[in-house]
Image 1 (cartoon, helix red, strand yellow):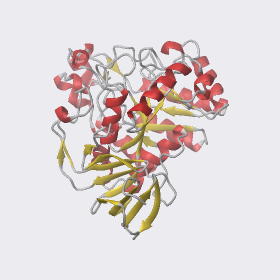
Image 2: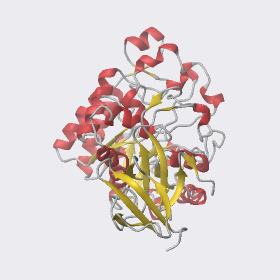
Image 3: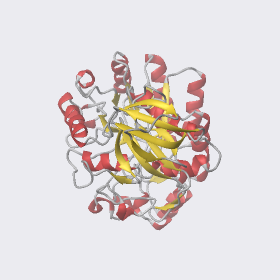
Image 4: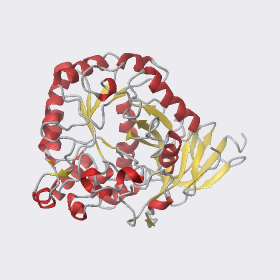
Length: 434
């Protein structure tokens, strides 16, 4: 064994429970307990919580087309700093990821960056137009091995098109991730939760029912087709109710929630700060509470960032004209720790489930989301559960600065990230190999 391919994580708390040393050899967990450190590079993990590397089902990397906002490389850096070892890159790029060639380009850019596994999400429909199915089978058979398909940013509103997509992906174990927004109930200008506040501010309303009716329709289509549907960025208590019913019926539906929908509320829009403009919009406190409860009890399966970087010239406008979206990769784990772990709603083992194991299973990622066990790939994040860190948007490794957490202090931080045994982040900073 040589120092180059052998690392000893000393004193880590596995899933926040028992302490142990973890020996990594040639990218694989070789021993857990009290292994010899001879010839190994030692990383002090005393007081740190070890989790399997995080997996994000919902990331916007903007390349190709909007490299002024983010690139696969800069987004990969942000992901690694946030403790992620795999991300799924959404298809709403320019050109859209709706062909095998486009998917392979994103896949290759991710491999070149080398900091996280970048898996392209394929568009459901050509050019995200909602009319004609994209090259689903060719993308699935490409070397990118696409298994998740989404027109995210737009809803697949036509039920016939959605049915066909569900039937098509069933053949190769794929899943359709739906941006649930009925365009007749919440149009493209809708930007504030519909209620007293939207009326007072004069902002176009985005009612929760516009999400809920699509979720209800899609779970019925999933039952009809025997296929899988995934609900992107669930945001309302009504959606939680539909998901609970669907689960009780044995329908193959999964769902994700974003960190910002677990903590932020629509009250923040009172100052018209475009940082807080996101789609779906921030919701009232009662929706936030329902989402937290649903994540804790397993009705919602996963946390996904919906990391949506934007250049300043797209975000710094009057609220109604600003771009939708906010950053999330670097802060997701601290937010979830604050909202779910520190409040006693979840344990660190639960965090591993909703931020690693289950997202990897939903996306069909082999080698990601594995438990911390001998023989598993050493995709590992080490978290300081008692570090008070104040978010500074100007310190982000993302190209963009639309960070809703600027100035907030969280009580947990990512210290080290390993991708198949190779450190990508040490002591909170990127390893300068890439």
